[in-house]
Image 1 (spheres, rainbow over the protein chains, first blue to last red):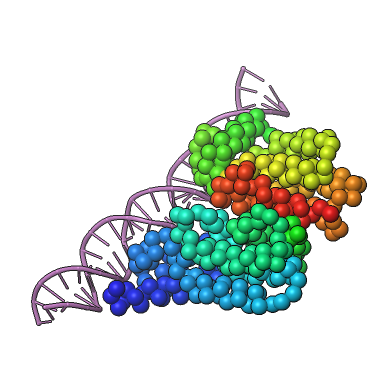
Image 2 (cartoon, helix red, strand yellow; image 1 turned 135 degrees about the horizontal axis):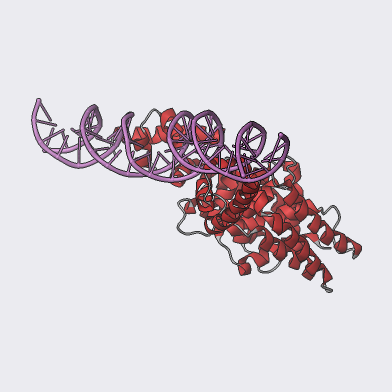
Length: 182
Length: 182
DNA sequence: GAATATACGGAGACACTCTCCGTTTGGCAA
DNA sequence: TTGCCAAACGGAGAGTGTCTCCGTATATTC
């Protein structure tokens, strides 16, 4: 890749991160291009769709997901606490941008989505939590990581849309946890 | 209201019903106006926003919600079956249009939403189910109807976005039910 | 330093929302 | 029945956003 192309790509990602954080996932892409100081054509050449741009933004996020799972899994204690800690972490991770929860959760399981890799990262991290709980025989049968992602993602999407705070989300997560634990 | 205004209003609702069913909640409103054979101005005079139009479409739906709750409540049997029957009914009711689940669920609890009345109808129907289950002492403590609506609505939204079928939704609803029952 | 592939920029086509205002019409009073 | 006018209509067009096309500029290679 040419040096100027590389530079523009990075500027665009940085600008998009800013704009999306300020205005949510629906922000104008022309605004992103303008803020990056490039033409609209340049943006669309690098990132043919909003989703591809989103995916690029989230590179550093992948590391954060894995770190968070590590952190949750070192905690010793009740399975219920572990599971709830992961749920709250999960909600936090997918709620970085307005509209994020719905976007990510609806891509969950769709192999053709531009953000598959992100979903797989999340699913894999959740799988680690599931594995741990299964070792401890704490989970009911037939509970799969993808179901966890969908349920918790659904709650996160509702919370995102309705501007619910942590306190309102907690009991919803508790219901899900209680429905999954023996 | 003048006779022509009344007629146009009805035509618009009918056209919107069609267009939204075909193209989802995001369909073009100009298309609705065109299909109804009226100008855009007429549409916006009758229905200042998409939500107000949505609300009008759903008039007949209110009756359906109440009928459905009646039907579910006559069934004798295990509390779990009753609850799951209501959940599946609920998902069906809010999934009539693409984008409906997210729309309805995010308006749940927002007093300023143009579709409050619809949400209240749903919440009231759910409350009837909650009341029945509480009579039977089948529910855990601190379970509220609005939480049920949010959880089940979240699942419905995910299913809507990801095109999940009934079979994939069922286990998610079971987790929620098990998390709520004693 | 010339040649060439690569990338840039932004004008503009297209789509959608919503408003404004000149025109038309339904309904009532005489 | 007629004439009036408030009520309602329609659609052009302004505002905003998406995305493409292609003439121009520049990084890289030899």
